[in-house]
Image (cartoon, rainbow, N blue to C red; front, side, top):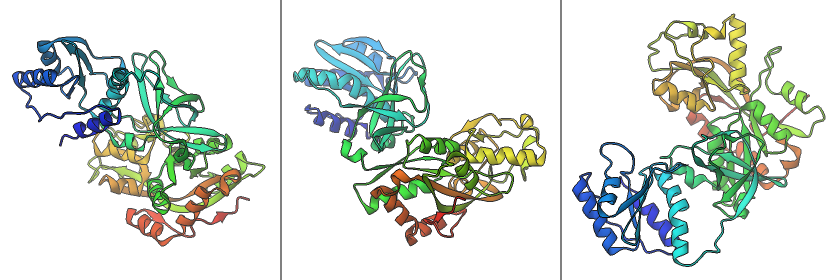
Amino acid sequence: MEFNSAIFSAMLVKWGAVPKTYPIVPDQPELVEAAVRRAAEECDMVLLNAGSSAGREDYSAAAIASVGKVLHHGIAMRPGKPAILGYAGKKPILGVPGYPVSGILVLEELLKPLILKWYNHGGYREENVSAVLSRPVVSGLKYREFVRVRLGKVGDKLVASPLNRGSGVVTSFVKADGILDIPQGKEGCEAGETVTVCLLRRKSDIEHTLVVTGSHDPLLDELGDMLHASDYSLYMSSSHVGSMGGIMAVRRREAHMAGIHLLNESDGTYNRSAVNKYFPQGGVRLVECVGRTQGLMVQKGSPKGIRSIGDLTAPGVRYVNRQKGSGTRILTDHLCRKEGIDTEKIYGYGREELTHTSVAAQIAMGTADAGMGIYSAAKLYGLDFIPVCTEQYDLLIPDCAWDTTMVQKLIEILSEPEFTRRIEKMGGYTIDRPGRVRSIK
């Protein structure tokens, strides 16, 4: 299904242009050339959607060259690298990559300035804001990179949480509040670094966004949906930096709350000892959320014969891990020590993913045979699951955020029957008294 033309047309109308959409053309050189020639005769500017990559069946560059001249095929930006810049007579032609996010960014960065100049809107400026980055972003030195982010205001600072960077994930643009522009020659940005973000939404919306960080769990998506459904002015922005990352973000006052599940190896309890260690003077509240089942996620039927954590050292078994500092990684390290397992003998133990669902996706795609995670992620990807333990997943909330409308509404949602219904449907959770403030001491 082709939907880029609908997205691009809406963007053009917003900028004051009148889009004219032509029928889809089969991948035959003479037909593509004829379509470009016709569009160049009938329009002031031409967009050629898809077919700009360097593959054998991508005819866009040749078609543009046949009716005019190709100036550049491939530019140093990402997403959007395969774009083509050309012209026919006095009319510019832009070859746009087929991936939706690439196409959107190419239009934003290359076509929009041209249209605004056409209308003599040279004084137009995007609104930029400064924000603190919630987790690191890696970028290649060769490209200028555009990263979609969610934004939220915590105290007097804006916090930016990077979204999925895939060129085909158009929903990341729907969720994005802004664009982080990483210049060519910069390797990326560190967590906690102050960055400049170009706004895509109103500041008033961003100020009503609940910033959640820490340990990943799919239930956060459910909570975000329920929060917005309860009040359409409220939003949630979540980033996955692991339990320890969540605790540090709360300490730095860069989050309204953090999901945590940190095991105390000495007594088997969760979260209290970590909270006391990092917040000896208090100033935070630990809110009960759910118990959840952790275990080994394996391919359907477990073709490698994995039945326990001890089988991970078997020849041919490929493991995918969670990142250091995450509660799941801490649990896995503990279990290996307890069983006397040398993690150096587990192939892939140093291979890290940021979420339970990312681990599950790698196993489902066949690039790994096993990984530690929660039952709901295994169920989502149709994997087999070997239970290991039930842990406590809580929400850590600083006192300075406790009385905000967003936090109080979320606490209310935790105790609603609808939350229980959704959690039971996902599977792998136990519920006692979600929303209750747990004693820390």
